Image (tube, rainbow, N blue to C red; front, side, top):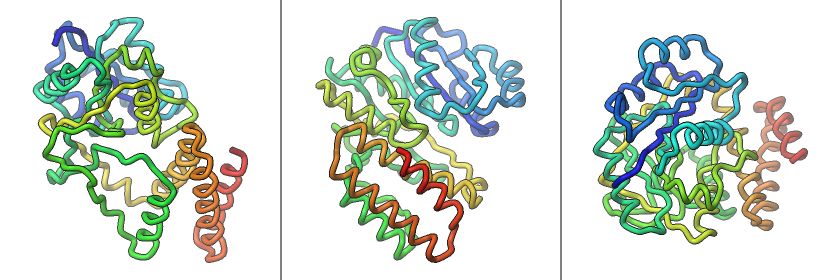
Amino acid sequence: MPGKTAILIVSYNATENLKACLESLRWTEGREEYKVFLGDNSSSNVISAMVTNEYPWVAFSMNEVNLGFAKGMNRLCAQAVTEYAPDYILLVNPDMRIDSQSIELMKKSLDNGEKIAAVGPKLLDDENNIEDSVITPPKFHLLFMKFMIHGLTGSERISLNYDPTSWSRAQAISGACMLIRRVAIDDAGFFNERFFMYFEDVEFCWRLRKKGWEIYYDPNAIAHHSRGKSSEEKEDVRRWRAEQTYISLITYFSATGQKMDLWLTRLMILGILRARILLNKDADWSRTVIDKIKSM
């Protein structure tokens, strides 16, 4: 497994989780075959001071505005290619922790075939519950059923549609932790900057597959995911995530040329938002999102 690996992290208001993430990567310090690149989207002096004082081995940059995930990652990737010329690119969310053994296992998976472009590990939460590492690309009928179930029951439970114990080929894997062969990025391009957050990883995997590359899931490699539970309880955060999900779904179907799914999904989302207005539930927010969708 020769070659260099650039580890890319885009952070936003994630001080404690980011600290745990960087601690899990401290073993890369002083190793020529690994380099960590961190781009902070929150322009936080706290983050800047922490990284500068405690993690001087990290190549740190601060963005003047919140670029979002796709644009932030693209900027970091360009920096890594220019300054470090890596053979592998590892994406790591700031709320992830991963060790050297898991990264080496992912590199071995990549080396199982010259057309394997990307590998994702098993994702575990703080209670060691399995999170969705393998992603089924969205289709209207699947979205409709998901929204109906959530509307009727309030459930957001994840039902895995793959065997989490088996090394397997996938249509898409989570960008929360993904190891990518650099030449595959050179061939297919990196993230589509029409996305601010969500589904940019699925669209990237779609382009890789269109170019003839393969994507795999490796259950032997493990990354641990720590979610910020306190922030998830905030209503404005839930609304923001819903807005980004709606916009990114429409962007995904538009970018992949799925016209019928695009039309039906757009119609469904506008219907959901208009129903919320009629029920006087987040009416002002719903009107704002409707205007954004209509302008797309």
